[in-house]
Every structure is written in structure tokens, then in C-alpha cells.
Image (cartoon, rainbow, N blue to C red; front, side, top):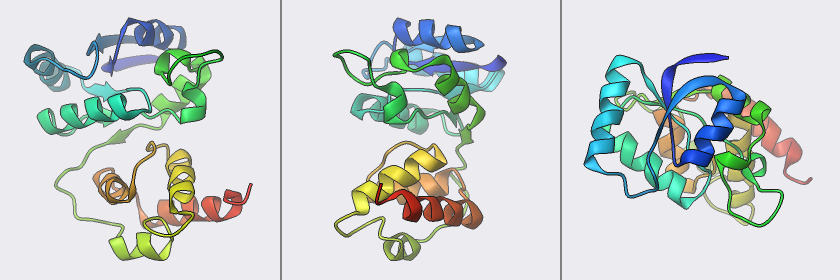
Length: 185
């Protein structure tokens, strides 16, 4: 699998793991304190080749994703499920622990931001699906995020992410069917 876009990752261990899975160039942010110089590089690469943000499924990874999203609208996103990023031994979640197949799967399921698009899924639909409130909302959001491959988010972020990535009503319904079937497992 050869990619034209540049994959933005957090560090050199992520780059090593990406290179085991695909043929692609990477740009490392070296943590969540992204410099203005790095953001300028990301913007330039986005204009020339396209950029895929592929960060760890944790707080720092989400922070990096948000910083890039605000500075360079319209980038693509790849997400790993937490179980795919869990180390075999002690350590934190990370792209560097994912299998090559999990990385390829995430890169096959890219989302492109559409910041100016009208909302497709309403807050009311999320409420009715027990994704915003209720005793099982957190579990239901985790399952939905895994199925859609959009990462784990809280209720407010879920609304934004579903609409930012223009998840269709059909995709949402299919994901809810999955959640309802697997919630009890």
C-alpha cells in the first residue's frame, strides 16, 4: 500500500510502525506541544500532497488532532481503536503498538473533515440513541466510535465528529444496530 499523502504521527516509534504497514512519508509532531514551524509544515504538505492525521487514541493524541484541525482545516483522519493500540506489556496506548493490519485498516477508513457542511445527525437523535446521557452512554459511544472508526469521544465531541466527517444517516443507523447487538457482550 503506497500513499501519496503524508501521515502526521506523534513520534519516531510511530513512524517505524507505519513503515512496517505501508509505504508512506511521515511527519512527527514530537508530542502535543506542536510548534508553529511544524504546523506550517503540515499546512504546506496538506496543500501539496495531502495530510492524514494518525495519532494515538488517548488524550494527547486527541489534543494534537484538535490543534491540527484548527490550524489546517480539511485534513484527513485515521483512527485506531484502543484495543488495536494497546501494548503487549506495560506502557501507554499508541500507534507504535498496532499491528500492520490494524494500521492498514485504519488507513483504508479515512475521514476528511468538512467543517462547513450542514449537520446530518442531530443532538436529538444522539439523545434518543442513548449516546449522550444515561448509564450506558459511555459504553455505547465507545462501541459506536469503534464501529465507525472515528475514535472515542464524549457526547459533545460525538455530535461534532459525526457531522464534521459527514457520517450519513444510513451509516449511523448501521452503527447503532451494531451497538445494540454488541452492547451486552
